[in-house]
Image 1 (cartoon, rainbow, N blue to C red):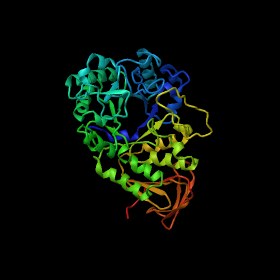
Image 2 (tube, rainbow, N blue to C red):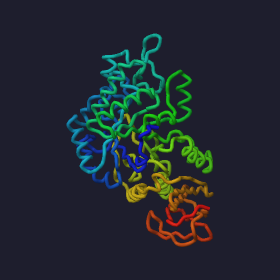
Image 3 (cartoon, helix red, strand yellow):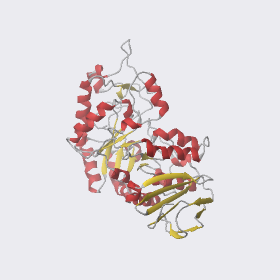
Image 4 (spheres, rainbow, N blue to C red):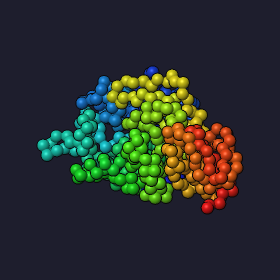
Length: 432
């Protein structure tokens, strides 16, 4: 991991926006009026999916993927201008938030300005045709980082954006050689030393596939040498296996606990229930009480939090990246108070640097414990809305549920679980 990464970044809540679909207008200007509402969720960073012009050659869908970028250094004219972008950043900063943008450095569109000017920067097969390590990405051309002149161009672009933004979310970061990212971080720090770097890391099966083809791809253990935060994709398959009933809660808890031993002490995972590449949380968890428990549990785990726009109102439709697919903000569900409260709790030092352990309490009830300096904060989440009992080392008595203020009773070292999420704590804890 980057040695200078502060564990205070575990306090972050990052709110992800696909500008094109967020509002009726789909522009940077139209997004600005929503900033106060986004801020009220507890948001620290607004992350914009790519806002650059989209390529036309081999485009998927009518509008094309925002990850098929035609020009890194320009703003999509359908979304606004560079001045609009700077104005948006200023408004975000005025509200006490920060701005993160998507950096897509593994590939460009197949009609990008970079491909036209420097075809030597791209992967080609023996016949001289464009070659992709991932053949499913048929709308893009993959870059070849063995050419160090490409490094100079990419780093100069990052420096340009660093004058405006506060963070970079780097798409498929492991497929770009790690030495590039190390060099980029060092160079960007000369423009803005406190830029936050988030890597979209990947899972084991994909790492194995790319390495079998003889190409670089970083594991999470490697990616942390250059990045502050990494995705939870190392256990994404384990999570989905549990959700779909293919494995037990005990199996899932085991890999979560293993993360805390596998990575450096100051590792930071971005915890999410949904993102633009995955199904919506409310689609995964149609039962509202399940959704509430999973929302609280996700935000109670050690690490930063990712919220995908629309998640807070329980949107279940997963929007396409390739066509206009506006968010439907009309909803009877409002998870905003819960998200705000969970973010408030995450600011406490016990959840930032306390010891951390998860346990299966049976009946699909998970227990999460943070401990530090005589304090214990205990979270209990019924992931399938089951009733049950959770054992605890806390003294018998009455406790306030830190989520909603309701009373929680510990009797004979046991908490009765009725299906609602619980977080309690004590300042007089002695480990047993």
